[in-house]
Image (tube, rainbow, N blue to C red; front, side, top):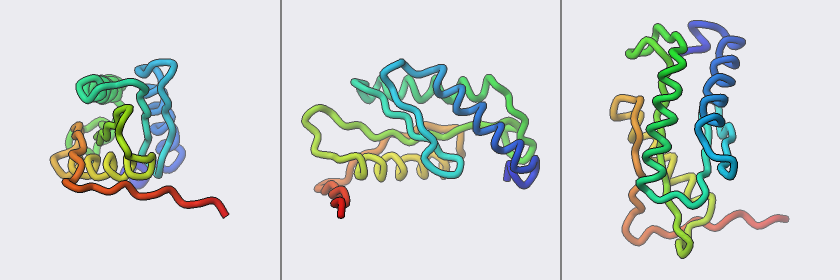
Length: 135
């Protein structure tokens, strides 16, 4: 909707502004990357669920504070929704399964009205998806 309203160059600039917010509000040891069209992945090292939620809400606030105009949004500015997946030092989840959990939580945040944070709850008996083997 943003690109349709403002054009692709403006959409690219909007993504740069969001990436800048994410980089400024994370620690040096954390990792921020564009994951898909308008999706980003933020990997927080040594963060508890409460810490990850706090960081996610801080990131959402930082993007709202930029007040990037978006008149097709119910908020009239660009906002972000965040899905969180947690893996502790003894967790058997691999990166693929964590991304799937975070993506599921992200869709729940979007379905709940956007500009929201949701924590993934692993399914009972959840089995990690193995990483593809290199050929």
